[in-house]
Image (cartoon, rainbow over all chains, first blue to last red; front, side, top):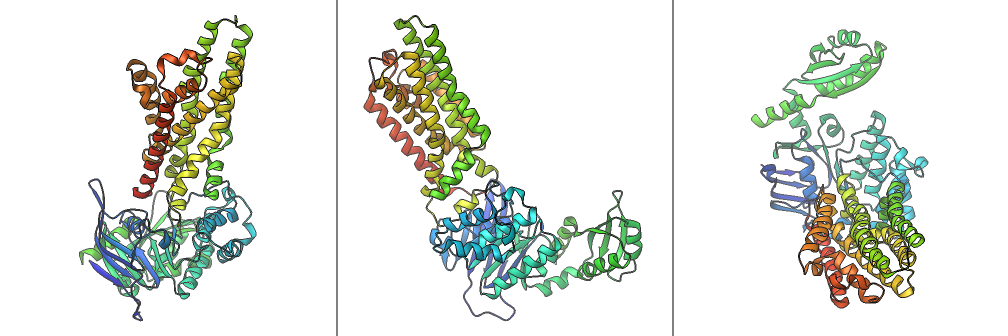
Length: 317
Length: 241
């Protein structure tokens, strides 16, 4: 499937990232199969279940891996081993490992030095300020929470002010407040004219920031375009959301009153599984409901398996 | 390049790794001191020292083990914990990543191994400066050459240490002792040949199993450059995990 990820307001600009007939295989395993897409400035969400080929695609776009077939260009240039082009790209990997002996600031400085920045100190200050970690920048990374580490990694990705940002599952490990801040930052950066490609396996994360999405499934591009149109298709299918609270029975009784809820069940582990046709409405209702009945909400998350069934559903149609 | 070198020194210079290197480097010194105390001052003791302690223990065992532990980790740990992306996605040529990794091994392992070897030689052989320099230069060449080979090994395989052990103990330890001519393709052979070539009289016990000095220098240089080139080539071609 070929796709042009265009802005709904139709940008006349040339695509920044072009993926043409790209395949990638590892031995006998085909990770990507003949994927083509164009990506323009603004935020593009790369969505798909785990194992769909999102990370492989991002690695090919950022030049970390070699295409088995096809071609990837950024700003019209081949990416792989094109060191000058690397100055214009920022990549945040899904792996959260950092150098634990560095402080947050040293880690960002290190990235800045390797990018050959002239005004290193001010660039580092600005990057750390952007992610809101100025007060803990001199603490060792080994002492950071998962969310803080993720934000400092983003600062290191932003320090050279790249025009293209490739973010692989950037919101994993962040708490709801950090997530909102993170999303706000991404939107601000897109407003500066940057091209941002952000991957996630969680629909809600992408929906909040990306107006257009690319939907990956089993190594292929399954759908592309305006988020709302694709989302409408998704909402035709019921899918499952897991809710963890300290009072599952009380919460389950309250949930059945919500229109968006199709059915509610409580597992042996006490987790509530809700089947819903309108997950967006459900996600909005659940925190309010928990507050009303005064119970503690520990987790609300779409289940991967049900996501996969939705993606399958889209592909079949 | 200084940033990557400093990072690599921090990565390789962990407390436990340094303690192990120090312990291994001190072992021949302790043994040489013991030999010195109980020696009979005859030439058979000197030959035993050269054959067993200098060749067998230091050059054939401790040096490759120490360099292996450092060099295979130089890239191996980055591949394993997936931090290699922080380096290879930056606008710097690959040799500027490979060189500091290689240098970090030499800078951490070299001084301790060379210091231990030289001190052991002075104690064990009651040798003068020429023998000490010969042993020091030979060990330096060995450390550099092994570092180039094992840095590459750490980048190409998750089983780098197994590869390195097979190379050291099977190829250099067993096969080289059975088949004449292998010393031309052996880091241990280059190391011993450089030592012997720089002080033939004191290290005469090595004379029957080493090549000449120029051949050893050329061999060590070619192997170092070859494996450094292979490391750069691997960095250019590999898919970053």
